[in-house]
Amino acid sequence: MSYLEEMFSLKGKTAIVTGAGRGIGQVVARGMANAGAEIVIICRHGADETIKLIEGDGNKAYYVQADVTDEKQVDAALAEVMKRSGHIDILFNNAGICMHQTTMEATVEEFREVIDVNLTGEFIMCKAVGKIMIDNGIKGSIVNMASMSGSIVNIPQWQVSYNASKAGVIHMTRSLAAEWVPYGIRVNSLSPGYISTPMSVDVPKELIDAWMPLIPMHRMGKPEELIPAVLYLCSDAAGYTSGQDLIVDGVYTCI
Ligand code: NDP
Image 1 (spheres, rainbow, N blue to C red):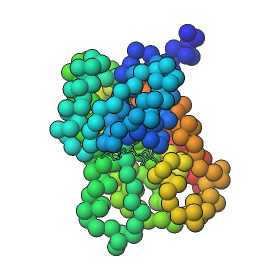
Image 2 (image 1 turned 30 degrees about the vertical axis):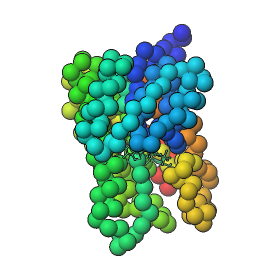
Image 3 (image 1 turned 135 degrees about the horizontal axis):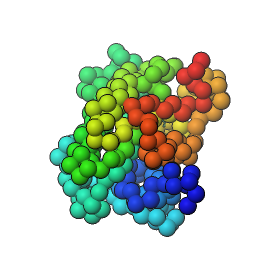
């Protein structure tokens, strides 16, 4: 293995990827498996397609069911992972939801639901995985899924709950990064712009047409274009990088 391959390699690591049954999680999990990691997928509705793709590449993956908003389900899922794999080295905290609505349309329950999955769910996963890493002396890496919406306000759709949840993820990431330096655990966040997945393309065509002039690269990103960013953050290549938010957005947030 060359020096560079070794630096970015995930060989021998067990990586949990939440929400990898479809979308970004599916594609990035496959990329992480190709870099050598054994993948554990956590979501609510199964991940047969992702497992088939990863095993088809000759790599390893399995599914454990849990809702990331439920601490008991998460603890039970992680206990199963420890029994089966013996260690957890990487968490790609990717599961998330989005609601497009004005503030006056949004109910408090809907606001809570988005915060519950996107922010509290990521906290529950960080806390549970962080405890396993600390208790077992594992110098692991956590990549929390944020969004450019954590730094800017998207238009023309309104999504106050989503934007607030992702801003929370970015600052939670910095807080955990500082707190967990003594344990050698690195925590970073990833902030994509518009990426072609069910979450972003199952919207009215007029909305996608309205986004295009606002993206300097005039296209949505492909989920594949996030693989190198996640590989960097969760591998030894980013050994001196923690508490950072990596924005991958086709230049959206620069203008
Ligand atoms: P998708 O809607 O395609 O996938 C979301 C995944 O999250 C699904 O696999 C779903 O699985 C899982 N999920 C949702 N709620 C829960 C829950 N309570 N517990 C466990 N798993 C859950 O979304 P994307 O792939 O587009 O997005 C992935 C992440 O990337 C999200 O955090 C999103 O906010 C973020 N992002 C997306 C962008 C985009 O343009 N697509 C841009 C920037 C950020 P299941 O239903 O089986 O539980």
